[in-house]
Amino acid sequence: MIPRAQLLASLTALATIAAGGLAAAQASSPTPTSAQDGAVVYKRCAACHTATGAGIPGAFPPLQSDFRELAASKDGRRYLSLAVMRGLSGPIEVEGKTYRGMMPAQSGLDDGDIASVLNHIGTKIARSGPAFRAFTRAEVAAARKSGASLSAAQVAKLHADAGSQ
Ligand code: HEC
Image 1: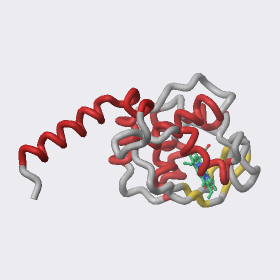
Image 2 (image 1 turned 30 degrees about the horizontal axis):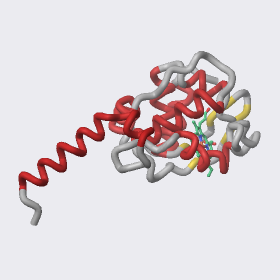
Image 3 (image 1 turned 180 degrees about the horizontal axis):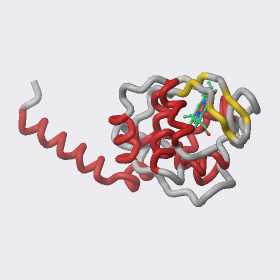
Image 4 (image 1 turned 135 degrees about the horizontal axis):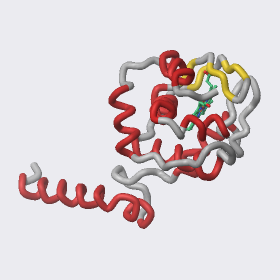
């Protein structure tokens, strides 16, 4: 059995690493307390949305101006986080085209990983649309909590409410 004092010391050390945040994440290889690199996470998205984020018209929507428009509103930001963690089952309209597909929930990504990949898309993939403001881990965590019971179809309904086309 691990002595209680030693356990507490380990927990304190872990909390310190977590508080180190981004600096720690960049300096060391991924640990359970540091977010994955957004570019690395994006590789799995690229399987459908393509490496440039252009998507495949009618099948996989582009991650371009619609993404940046969504990221400019509070409701849109919640929708983007939930689309990744809960999945998405349209119809949704993106850049004038209707998508009636099914995006599976992206498993194995924690709140920090999701913030990282959304920030990668907002800064490196989506090249047009309004100015992009970075997602935080706390913001993604709030979306996860408030949307815990939503189905992929219910998440898709949030698209229309988010004030985007
Ligand atoms: C297996 C294919 C697949 C993968 C992998 C995938 N997506 Fe999707 N994604 C889709 C499909 C299909 C839709 C449209 C769903 C619909 O038609 O309702 C979509 C829609 C989206 C949307 C909504 C776009 C908008 O303008 O409303 C976002 C955001 C998104 N995906 C982000 C991601 C991210 C981030 C990843 C990687 C972590 C990812 N996707 C991985 C298939 C995929």
